[in-house]
Length: 560
Ligand code: SRM
Ligand code: SF4
Image 1 (cartoon, helix red, strand yellow):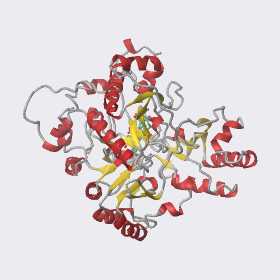
Image 2 (tube, helix red, strand yellow; image 1 turned 60 degrees about the vertical axis):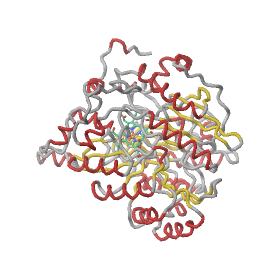
Image 3 (cartoon, rainbow, N blue to C red; image 1 turned 120 degrees about the vertical axis):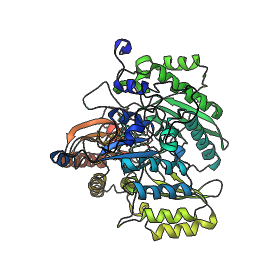
Image 4 (cartoon, rainbow, N blue to C red; image 1 turned 45 degrees about the vertical axis):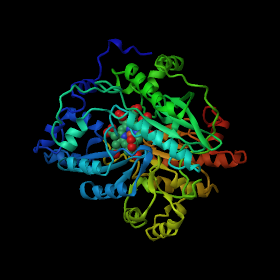
């Protein structure tokens, strides 16, 4: 266990401490007409407000040569608890994107929505308009609890309704209390009243690092519940939600060449009633607030606090804070990923899960997602649900609207799921270049090309209908949860990836590093060889990753 006691806290801790509850000098930064950027300290504080300063990495060098400042713009992330938004909110988001960003909504792997390319001068208007749509961006990023996810679709509508309400309550309960957001973005000036501000859950320096919660409704583990700092796994009996298994300490991020950083699966530590979930979440967050490592941001997630001190310590600490869990209830997951196409729930309402390539809501030669979804939103009596895999569900469609919605889906080419092979529609990539400042390689823009290669390989080996989960990220931070995939490509340098193999089909087994720093050609060669081996030697119905473990190609961990 590292001893953080005599190390100084990180610079970000100091910035938070002197930010006066997340104000910093954001107001001054916004008013500065000389630059398209904000002050360096404010780039940390703005994250808590859901805003990341970025610049176009493709024009960086050229602009420096021309002695111009980088082409700054901002990414804004709107929180959408449980991924649920109304048609009116959807329409508002699309219009805001058209008016103030690069025009596209980007659905994220945590069921939220991002706008890219917002200029500094447009930030305040954009934030106000998002707020007018009854959504907000506060705590979508930063060292606080982020958007709370929830399986967006369950056969049992009542269980989904209750679980998603608990997700919204947990989200609300863990939202910071400072009035900074309101002052800076909405009122535009300090609010009257000078009583000292108090963050009852977070304190003045918030958490040591980001914190993530999601609720899974078995048999689906579409939220990848074991990748969360805190996961709630719904338990039903006789069609009713009776509580949640509680899992703690998951996380994906790591750094190349730093073995002290690693992805980790959450451990199930017990069971709580639905009503206790908010108190459990508060207690877990407070333990991390008090014991998380504030001296090293690469060692500051809950997973390291738990590994350093032990799971028994963690459960005891929960007990000291009045949280006593019962024994976990056995539950089974059947799959990760989304179930595409039409499904009916126990209320007799219909849901259409659409495949949204790269999570980008765009009009192009293949699909008119922007226009089609606007047309649907104008008539839909139900709601939209963003999935944890960057897709979208048109939800709660009444019988009387089903035909019309189907007509609009067909008319606008929104039924991409029909023609896409399973390997394509289940694949996931993070944003990466050109906007992500941390990307070392392409991901979202490269995914279609790489999947084309994998499709060719699968066809050659007679495996076209094989479920093979491919995930690509532009760096090891893990935004598309690549360490849970059958085949994970983790960016190392332009055109180079570490090849990870052997994740489990239900998101409960991490994959393993297989080869490092490979070009596309080498990756395709490796997969070709392994697939040939698989076809020749697999047991009937055996998944690819299970085979790699059984055959000793990977370290043995047979079930996932
Ligand atoms: Fe992420 C940082 C995008 C989900 C782990 N992530 C970033 C930033 C903000 C880059 C930055 O810090 O400058 C990326 C912005 C790119 C851009 O231009 O939009 C970014 N992360 C995303 C999104 C948009 C990926 C996507 O393609 O959908 C996801 C937004 C989720 C949301 O709505 O809140 C996204 N990020 C994730 C996930 C998956 C999840 O949460 O289920 C992870 C892995 C789980 C985890 O947190 O352990 C993830 N992102 C990271 C990390 C590594 C954290 C760590 O513990 O080391 C970073 C870097 C950091 O925090 O320093 C990061
Ligand atoms: Fe950026 Fe890395 Fe996250 Fe991809 S995984 S969005 S490259 S931080």
